[in-house]
Amino acid sequence: GNDLIWNEVDEYFIDKLIPFDSTLERVLHVNKEAGLPEIDVAPTQGKLLYLLAKIKGAKNVLEIGTLGGYSTIWLARALPEKGKVYTLEAEEEHAKIAERNIRQAGCQDKVEVIVGKALETLPNIKERVIAPFDLIFIDADKPNNPHYLKWALELAMPGAIIIADNVVRDGEVINETSKDERVQGIRKFISLLESEPRIESTALQTVGSKGYDGFVISVVK
Ligand code: SAM
View 1 (cartoon, rainbow, N blue to C red):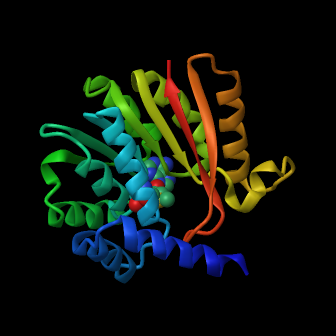
View 2: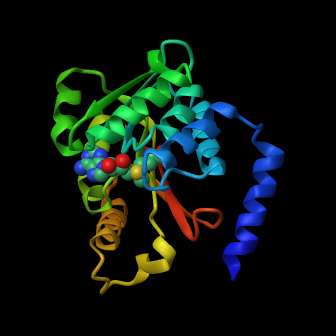
């Protein structure tokens, strides 16, 4: 079906616009070998995160959902010297693999992986005064997205970019009676954005190697 052409178009753009990078290729390979689910962002999307961080001139980034560190490395590479990505991961095993990948990418000075459920580690982040952040990427357990948005608003500086992945879910996002709690998490998250005066947002549908999905992109007032 459509997936075939989406894949081919993704490959075309990757080939033309994203210079071959053995480090990032290796990260994806290592993650697959380790049995991690292939739910890292696509290369074109990793580069979108990188470009947004550059456009913003981001220096202090928060990522919720590390997996094997693929998106983390994209973000870290966009930062200036002394820039930092704090990335939150619940699974010890994922965090270990991510740390190894981040070291192999030479990004260890720019990244801190924080292990634990994000709703338990976010309060520490506030206490440690490493906020405010100028870019926040929300990409963990979707049922908690409404909570992550509240935290993001708490920890963001004025003008910060907030990005959330997987907000379309094959179109399921418009199914108000969906039994999928991830879909309901996204719907609550979108409703919060609707009612929250401190933030301006849009959503972009995406197709490609990761199927039919999309991002929310917001700026904090
Ligand atoms: N951002 C990664 C990338 O693009 O390479 C992909 C992240 S993956 C979609 C989601 C990750 O969030 C998984 O590694 C999962 O273990 C983690 N996760 C799930 N629930 C979490 C929670 N409550 N707190 C922190 N991380 C969580």
